[in-house]
Amino acid sequence: MLAKLWDTVKGKGNPMFWPEADRALLATGLLIFCNLFFAFFLVLGSFLPGLSEFSSMPDFRTLFLYATGSALFWTGFGGWVKTRFCARDPNATLPGILLIYIACFSLMVFAYFNGVHSFTSGALLTVFLAFAFVLFQTNHVLIVMLLAWLQLTVITLGVTFGWWPDAPLFADRPALRALSPVWALVQVAIGFSATVLMLLFIRQLVGALRESERQVRALSRIDPLTGLWNRGYLDELTMRGIHNAIRNRRPVSMLVVDLDHFKKINDEHGHSLGDQALIAAAHAVQASVREVDYVARFGGEEFVVLLPDCDTPEAKQVAERCREAVAHLEIVGEKGQVPLTASIGIATAWPPFINADDLFRRADSSLYQAKEGGRNRVVAGTDAPGSADRGVR
Image (cartoon, rainbow, N blue to C red; front, side, top):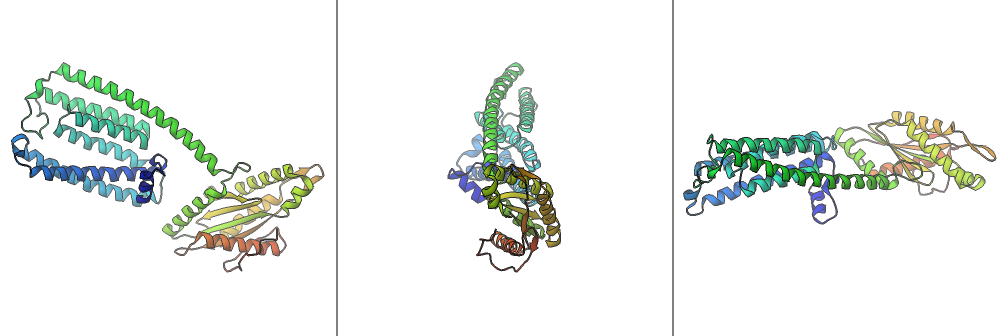
């Protein structure tokens, strides 16, 4: 998280595109900082000469305790998000939803003590909602905005009719500040309208930016020919799968799938038919694995399949399904049907010692053995020899 935040500061990242749970954790950290900063300011202010002449010291201490308690609460909330969601379910929306609702209530408490009509209270509310629009689901932010303005309306009317004091933090406040119910409602209506227009505009911009970024990210991750994940995104998927395997203490397996004699197909039937065969093989492999598995085109006629929570016997079953699916493909060219088969190497690793490079090296070594053994077969091994010679295809 700190590394991501530092990248953002340097302009190399954007929290808008982090997983949902990471965004909630970032917002939690900012709330902790704001509450601690406010508590520090209250402590510092208590030592200023003559503070008691224009501030209510009991309310001063109450607000300090509230800020400190809020910081502790958000610290616990952040720990819960990190342990429960960031590692296990990074795209969960629950942390962000809870955060904006709770933070909105907390902000209303500060607004009451400071005065709901103050510029600071209005600025904090506006900035909070704008920040929430950028990071979280806009539908929930709109609901929070309505709830915030409802709370402000209630507080304003309460101050107007003398049900409770206005800005109790300040002892020298003018009595009710010459408020009237009509004036209070007009102020709320104007502020509400202006804020809605501004935030809806921000929402439109953010929505367009997110959609554009989503399309760009999708294109950057997908192999344009086969529609599978590309080699660049494979590294990220592998690291994610290994991280989950270590955390859950479960195995992870990798298949390296290579189409046999593919160069001969291109030479004898042309690259157009070769592309058709490659696409058909990619679809066959994709259809033969589980929904939780990742299939990527590694390069040329080679695919890599990452199998989370899968030991060697289970990986062999998946690999055999892939091999049979490719062997049963009907690729027909001008010279008749083109036979297509695949050789598959398997490697499995168990936590805590899982290394991405070593996992691929061992799967690739098993693939080399499958090629040497006659092709169109599956080979699994844990201590297979190195694959320095990759010339056999």
